[in-house]
Amino acid sequence: MSIIFRNILFVTFAITFAVDVFLVDSFSTQDIKNESKIIFFDIGQGDATMIDAGGGNQILIDGGDGKMILEKLGKYMPLLDREIELVIMTHPDKDHLGGLVEVLKYYQVAQIIETGIVCETAICQEWDRLVDEKDIPIKYAEFGQRIDLQSVDIKVLYPFENLHDQKVKDDNETSIVLRVDVENNSYLLMGDAGFKVENELIERNISIGAKTLKVAHHGSKNATSNDFLRIVNPEVAVIPVGENRYGHPTQELLNRLKNMSIQFLQTDLSGDLVFE
Ligand SMILES: [Zn+2]
Image 1 (tube, rainbow, N blue to C red):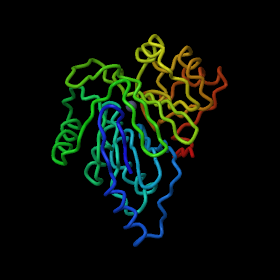
Image 2: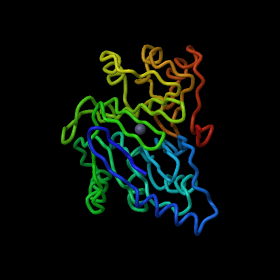
Image 3: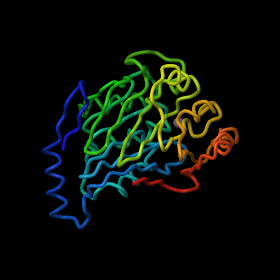
Image 4: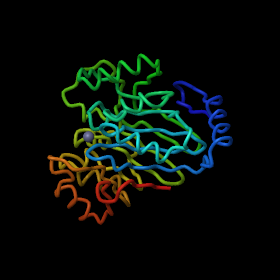
């Protein structure tokens, strides 16, 4: 199978794919299915989304905090598949990156996309060390990049330019924003971006309409404005949230969704949300 970064790079996973199929056919009763799906994990206070592109190909976007992601991958990945084709780290906060560090320890990751902003926390240092040790190729996110994996199509909508090595005040506002198309459904994944990023996307007339919105920043009141919701015009909003001391999801945010009659689902109340 191949994953294609249009105009940017081209990596094939033909050998890996063949090995996966062989192992599963030979030793497992668990089928590798070909349908695509997207799963928003109930991962506590944090954020982790997996796109299963079918055929044993996965893309993981953030990993929540800590080891819980390993249980989730164990549940949703084929038994003997130890490779994730692509990991996207939206921004380096611990509730997104902590679990990805665990993923690097236990899975082979073929490719990483991140912003590359300067981050000197302990968790970032561990991440950088593991990426170096395992020699995983990194691509820095930038508007216009496109990732095709089987029937899954992903577009990078934010940041508008390569932020590698930049020092930033608020890393939430550098979150990688993605538009994902899977099986005739469209998703807008906002990371922890706030009003600033939303306004920039609106001002630049970026196409942000989507059937499903993964609400930014766990339902913070400082994201997901009325104007933004009107333009995205989602049928469903997914709120990745767990027990927390920030009051997420905030009543302000829930009221905005209710006033526009947008159905919403919280991972803490509904568990893992699987869209097929
Ligand atoms: Zn977060």
